[in-house]
Length: 253
Image (cartoon, rainbow, N blue to C red; front, side):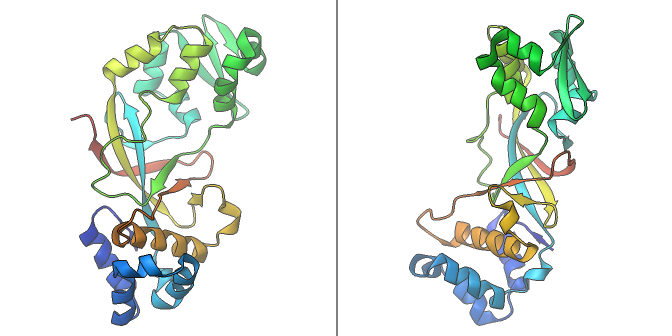
């Protein structure tokens, strides 16, 4: 069963199926519960109140820019080395990417730029680009989200890789401006199995049961706590994972 927070009706139907009793359901759907009770105590009670094993996947929310409407999310290495709108955009401006032992290298005007070559150009400016080429291998998003979150409040105007290359190679915002003219803002919703998802910053501490408790608590408090208690959780997938998109919402209209 998917823990889907896209709208309140869908979410409440899921919670009703998960709940073991009507009393428990009413308790956790009462906004006062989240105002007066300790979080950790509530999480402990949830283990008895809900059939958590039924939760097999969740929706994560990813705000981004694409030249074309996206059909899947790819890790950076695959995005830059396969044929798609972004890699074609870079080719127009003379940038080609190659993968070498999981690290990415840039080819420009026949010259290869890896870590050493980029450092020689300007180590301080090149550091974000080097870090991205060598370590940015995962897809990420936030949970919970809902249909009201279709404004790009957390979106970058351009992908970070474009900003990093523009600055490192002294393009004077040429790449940034060109991409902004073509791109559209999107909210991308992706289904992620519980087994795969990593809760950022604390992944080693979460068993699948602990993930389910934390995610359900966040989802419940996002809808029923009236004072802004719930901050979304940052979710990422294992390095090099690819995911199909469940829903795409344009944020540019």
